[in-house]
Amino acid sequence: MPEKEVIERARRDAQEGKSPSTQAGEFVREEIEHVREGKHGARSPQQAIAIGLSKARRAGIKLPPPKKGRTSAKVRRQAKRDLRKGRSRGKSPSPRRSRATTNALRRESTNTASRSALSRQARSSAHRRGSASRHRAGQAAARTRRRRNRHS
Image (tube, rainbow, N blue to C red):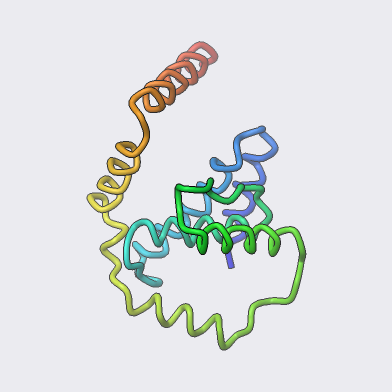
C-alpha cells in the first residue's frame, strides 16, 4: 500500500496538470526508496520501476499500458488489470498473498537501487529512444528551465 504522502504528492501533480507519467513517478520514487531502506529488494531496477508503476495504476493514476511491441503481452495484460483495479474500489488484498509477495521481495538484493544501477537503467532506456526523441525532451526541459528562471 503506498504511503499517504506519496498519494498526496501525486494528487497535487494531477491538480497542477502534470502528465500521468509524472504522477506515477512519485510511486516509482517511493519504491526505489523502499529498496534502498532495505524494506525489500528487487531483481533489477526495472522490477522496482514496474512495481511502482503497478502501484500507481492501482491507486487510480490513468497511466496507459505500454504500447504493443514495447513489452510482452503479459505485461500489457497486467497493466490493464491494474488500471481496472484502480478504477474500482474492490476488496483489500488477501493477507496471505500479500505476505508471500513481501517475503519473496525481501529475499532479493537491495543494491539494484544503487546510484550506479539506476544510472545504467536510465542510460539504456535513453539509448532505446531515438536521438530525435532525446533532443525534443532536452528542448522541452530547456524551455521549462527558462520559464522557471524568468519567474523567480
